[in-house]
Image 1 (cartoon, rainbow, N blue to C red):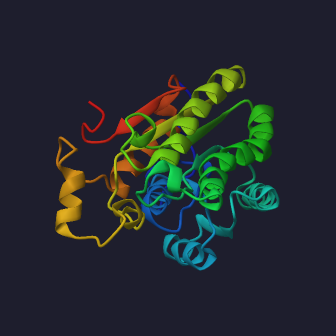
Image 2 (spheres, rainbow, N blue to C red; image 1 turned 120 degrees about the vertical axis):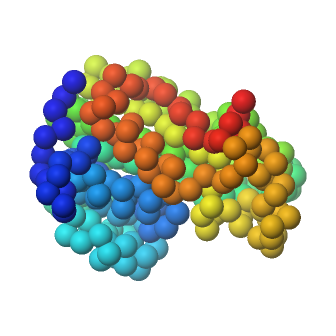
Length: 263
């Protein structure tokens, strides 16, 4: 197994990601912010990429010199190219890519979703994975190392009604993860995914489709055997493991972090 030796963390210890350089997209809030914060705590240098530039800058300020904010629209080729350049300038290389940026869908019958909304779902949730691969994978191949983590969803495994096209984007991401993993293995680039259940994040209101009330949450909780929503800390803990050298023999996995939702 590869060594995790690297620069020490703020408290002088060597974290599980010490010496690594990571990009986390959609990192200004929610799961992305949790992942970015935990990565820094584990010794990584992290580029916080988000369309919300102010939010990304605020989080980078909280995390200190190990974090750098970049405003980026991950569905735009030029923005992703600039993100890759900024990350390389900041850290010298890119060891880890977390494709976390995503948008949700308000519950509605599949035939009533407008074309613009459909295009937006696939541009952010699917095309972004293609674009980051286009601009970041070549350097990982050259270095013959790297870890890519895609944040998918239980919706891609066990779809809920009235979220058809969102579910489809996450099913696409799971298949893309496996396809990328088998193709990139010869360069020692690992590709995995996490399938979170509904999370206690700002995106939850979109999926509820109305007021965020205890009754609305109960409808979701009733489908989760562990009876709670996922949290940024849950997803961050899993992300650290899958992106660390502890998972050096794991690739092509779509790990459900769902409290039993997909059982």
